[in-house]
Every structure is written in C-alpha cells, then in structure tokens.
Image 1: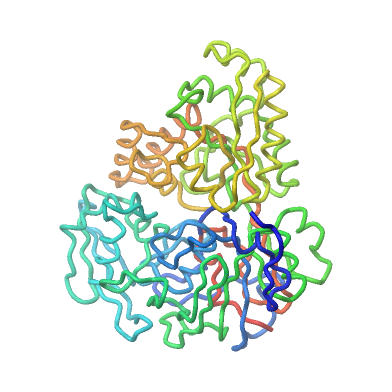
Image 2: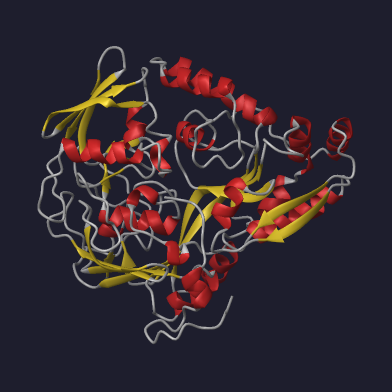
Length: 528
C-alpha cells in the first residue's frame, strides 16, 4: 500500500496511513440520574472558567478505512462510537463506575418476578423534529436482534423477548424477558444499543438521530462533520461544529495536534505522554485503568484447544515486564480476568506469577515440547507490537518459539476475530457481565477466544436471573474462577487511556474510562 502523504491542504499533518487504516475497541459522560448531565470537574483540561459557546473542534481518531459507516448499530471501533454518540442516544449509558445511568429512559421498573420491565421515556426529539417514541425503541432493538445481522449489541439484547414486548403508550415500553433478569439496565446501556427512528435504514447519506449534534457530511475513512443540535434534550452543545478526522498513525494524530490541525487527539502512547506532559504546549489527559491488555488464545483449535497449553501460556508471562516495557509503566498488572476494580471482579484469586518450570511441565504433558505458534499483532493499538516482542522473548525461555506476524491496521480486528490462533487484544471499559455477554457466550458476536461452553452460558443466565446481589456475585465469581483456570484471555495488564488536547480545550472528563458515558462526550466540551 502506498504510504506517502495525502495532499489535503487543510491537514498537512495527516498522511495516507492516517486516513486509511483501522483501530480497535469500542466506546461515554457521567450523568445525573433522571436529570441533565454536567461534565466532571478537576484538571486543567476540565476546568478553565465559564463555558462559552462557539467554534469548531476537530478530533483525530484511528478509524476503519473506506468501509466506515455511520450506522450506530455497527459501531465497533472507538471512532465509530464517538461519532455514534454525537448523533444518537441510548436509553441508558455507563457512568465512570460502570453503573447504568438513565439517558433517553427517564426511569425503569421491574415486576416482582424480574421478567417484565417498564421503561418510561423522557421527552426528546429526533433531528427531523419528530418525538422519540416507544415505537422507535422497539424498532431499534428489533433491528439489532435481527438473526440475519451481526450487530454488536445483539448478544446483550438476547434476554429480551422482543416479540412479546410492546408499546404501552407513546412514551412507555413494556419489555418482556425470556427469563428473570436482575441487571436489565445494563441491557439498555449495551454498547451499540442506540435508538434510531422507526424504519431507518440509511445512515451514511443523511442520518437522523436524537443526539447532541446533527449531520453535515461524511467521507468514510476521512472525515465526518456535525453541527450543534440546539434542541437537544440534555442542553445544546457549546461547540458550533464538530469534525472527526481519521488518522491511524499515532504520530499523525500527535503532529496534527502539535501543528494546530486538530484540537483533540485520541489514543496517544505513554512515551508521547511523558514527552509532553507539563510542557505547556498541549494538555495530556490520562484515563486510569481504562483498557484491558491481553493475548487472546483461540480455544477451539490447536494448540489452545488443550487447556494445559493455555495454562502454560499463563505461566510463561511476566506481567510486570510487559506493563513496564509495552506500556512504559502507564498501567497495572492483570490477573487473566477482565474488569479489575469493577463491580463483581474476582479480586480474591491469587495473583498469577511467571513459573517457567511449571509451564514446561504442562507443555510436556500436553505433548507440546518445542511448540511453535504465531502471534498476530499490528501497530493498530499502542503497546501491541512491543508486547508481542516482549512475550516472544519470555516464551523462548521455556522453549516455546513465537513467531510475531504483523497484520494490517485496515483489517486487524476483523482478521483476528476468526482467524489465527493467538493475537494481541484489548478492550475498553464495560461491566463484567457485559464482557461475558459480548465476548464469552456461545452466541457472542465478538467472541475472539472462541469460548463456547453451554454450562458457562447457563451460569450467565443463572446470574442474570438471581435477584439477591450477593448470590449473583457468587455466580459471577464461579464463572471467573473457570476463566482464570482455563479461559482464553491472557490478561497481562490494564493501561491508562491517554488523550491529548489543545490548551484551548475545556470540559474533557478526566475520570471517564474509555467506553463510558463521559468518554468522547463532545457536547460538554468548549473552546476557551
């Protein structure tokens, strides 16, 4: 692929790679329940005096190339989600503590059996002036659940019986569930569960949402321009316009920020943060413990269909060396489980340490002496290529030869979802039960480890049907013990999520992990 510059006179810092390759993950601002939202306070970028209206903010994200879409139900990359949340709303979203907070839903209430929930909508309108109604909600969820489609939120919406659900009136939805579901609000806040107008199918030429910004233009793989929605239910944004620019190379995002071509650069490296923090030219924002860093082992194929090999790989790993080397220390070590510090996290399990002798023993028992394996990686995300090289050297100490294969940033996430046996992986924040439903159930559409176990699925359903929180936590703990012992995610760390902004940018939340409501919440940002 040609790697020379794109000759766009507006953005001399953005080069071809910046416009055409892909980045992973997905994506929120802490709301006050049942009321409007205000940005979190504290920190230079967040403060800056009284908000002022006006101006255009340009934000650089890694993107998905020419295949990008504004269909919010297909949102998968961080750029997709940032654009989706500017144009659309969900019924609920996750606060900084990963608890569901009301958005388009004004309230939700269960029956005694937890198998029917009544959701009342707040007064909100779409960009075409039509009110957001129960019909729109049901259409949106039924579209996501279409068995012929692979929309991201489909697995999260699985507990809903959408055929039996109904609109009680224009602003009330009665959701029927297939089974009692104690954590129903997490379904409403599911990633990708955006509300679109009844019958909407065309999202790339003139999308209509209820979000804080209205559509102006969209060029896949390059730019999306939005303008302020003065009628937004949560208060009109401060900015006049918002433009998302695709820049896959971290250097392109940084150079564009330093050169004044953009005011916001998503996902900078720890090295960049150290070089520029406190120097006065740009502001560095660190969202702590925001991104899980892992290697994903495909459990349905050799060599990782043998749980002894998976355990051996857990024991090959020096997690501190990976955090120090691949993340430059900007994070903390993991313990092969998602969600460190979140509700229901199994923090009572022993911290796993490197044990090369035990790893050799397990590999020998599995008939995998002298094992050779390919580790897929890419420069698609910070720390990926570095962690692959470090792990290759760690594995070699136990006689395992790891070949590092560089993948295309344009297609890395799709390529590694089904292909290969071992790959670099990461995830933004989400509730632990959402991680289960989206990535670890037999029907999950983003099941990168191919973890397919009916008994595990049954445990998840049992937890969802358990009213008592302590009893529910016990089931989640059992599921995590299983993953800790024989799962496919080798979770070696949790990285700080690092953003860069121009010094004129105010209102960026500092305590909002990626994938929560306050992350990329541009309607609460202003230019000083």
